[in-house]
Image (tube, rainbow, N blue to C red; front, side, top):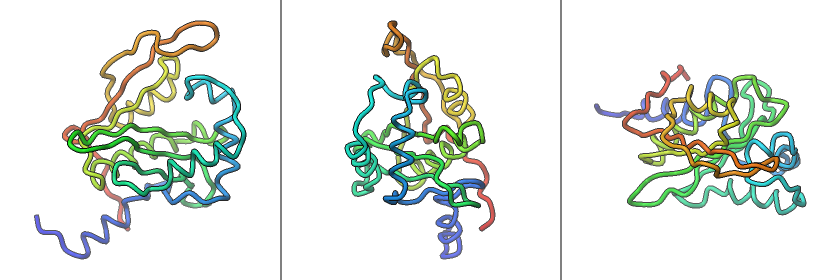
Length: 196
């Protein structure tokens, strides 16, 4: 198939935008919300190995680092609602190197934006970006077994469970399993491209 300039522009126009969300560079104004979401213990227990509040500035620097987009093996974006421009989360792919071309996915949707369909679209969009633009072969995510909501999002987005890390995390005085899920480029079926 021969690609022309119009094909390239159509692709570029949909690369970082879905029906409801847009991925964009981190802005300093995003940091207070990202830090607040990261520090909220009710949601931190679903994503973090240990819940412990940290000062805002080191967390802000963590998000800046994740979103620097300076290397070919990692990308990070703020997630905004397309119609309102409101920040709804953050997503990153990290750790990709040659020759393996495998990255790890990390996604955070702000607590007030959960259960509104953002997570599924963000995971699909960043997965398509990883396969189509970064040339990845594999994208993996690890999720606490008790985080059923996140596991359902990843499954709806084309990720398959491939293993269990038994007793890999510790919360509430006991150990919990961690589920390993992945998507492979050869199995990825991207949703149809919407018109620009």
